[in-house]
Length: 257
Ligand code: DGL
Image (cartoon, rainbow, N blue to C red; front, side, top):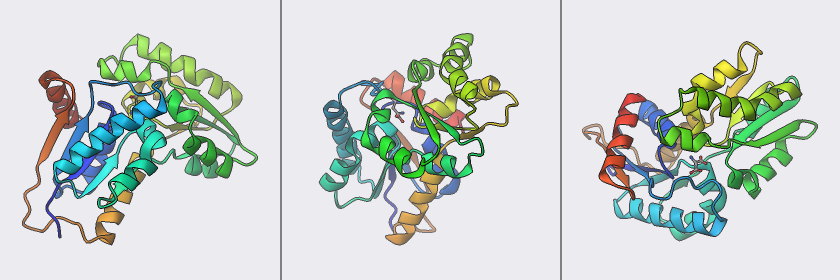
């Protein structure tokens, strides 16, 4: 038993899509969410810089006494997960899985679309996963240009968002993709628009966050880290930006439940 919180980290608001899944499957656990905010978006920054930012953030969550940390950011996972696991070896760290495997297993058209940030797509994690599971399958990797900015500025339900999503997704649909993987934790906030763009073409949109939450449950059980039955769970929100941003994190989190 361990009543310490689980830490969840992202460059900004996106990791809340993972936070809400963890909250759903582990309602008795305390959570600390850190949305950097000050340096978001990470998506086109150099890898070394992302590693430094992730180090600072995970260090802050370790300081806050977290018993397990989820890097709810594909970009930071791709750039820094090995480094973080080595540096903070005393704390289990869960990273994002690109979800290319389930999409490749499920595709019937043998065309899979992957949406993610530029830095995720040119990193080894995505490329190796696609090479490993995508044999004989066309894996189309397309950066979600402008997606993160739309979510960070609460414009995910606007005509501008629809145009942006259409520009990235239409070419995938034209190639016959029947699976579209959301490889960035900000993107599930664009699901209503994505569904409109995809329409009734029988396309499955794959969001890896429920699988990440299940992995957290597994690790808590493996290491005997579940909160005690008498524990009263709390949710805390931290940021490297200002108090207004911290409040936005809190409001968006509660609205997402
Ligand atoms: N939400 C993040 C991801 O999953 C990062 C987005 C960004 O900051 O560019 O990749």
